[in-house]
Image: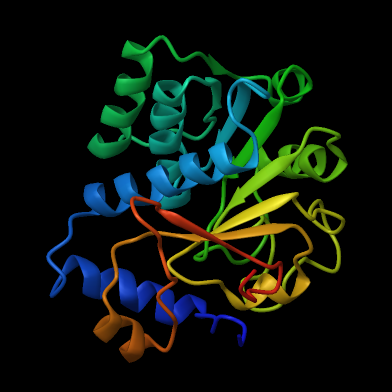
Length: 237
C-alpha cells in the first residue's frame, strides 16, 4: 500500500478553518477529539501499568490545548500526568481546560528538567503545524532536554522546533531531536520524511469528501479507535 499523502501547513490551516465554518465544528470539539487521539496513542505505546508517570509539555497554542485535553483523558485512563505549561494564555478555553485538570488534582510544574527525570514518558505538545521561526523562551532549554532525554517522547502533530515542510532544523536546540513516537493530526505533515520512530495518525473527524478536497487520506480506523498506526514514513503496517 502506498504511503499516506501529507498535508502542508497552509492546507492544514485552511482545513481547520473549513471544519469550523462549513464543517460546523467548534474549536473545543476539535481539540477534544485531537486530545483523545493523543491519549489513545500513549495507551498504545505503553499502558499505565507499565508507565504511569507522564509529563505533558504544553505550548501556548492549539497544540498545547491538545496536550491539556490529552492529560485529562490520561488521568481517566489510569495514568498520573504532570503538566508543564509555562506560557499560559488568558483565553477562556485554556483556562477551563486547566481548571478541569486542577479539579482532578493533576499537578503543574515549573521545572521541566526535574519533572522529566521522574517521568516514564513525555508528551511534546509545545508547537504544532503552525510553528515557524525561532524557538522562544522558555522553550529552547526544554527542546534541548527533549533531544537529550533518555525518557521516551511522544510528539503531537510535529516534533517541536521542526520545520513543517523540511523536518529537523539544521541548527538550534531541536537539531538532534527525533522523538520516539509521533501522532499526526488528521494527516502526516511533510516533515515525516525526517522522522524515525513509531507513527500514529489520529483526529477522527474528517469525511472522505473533505479529505479529497485537501488531498489527504482518511485512515482505516477500526471500531472505536481514534488512531491508526503506520510506519515511520506513513506506510501502512
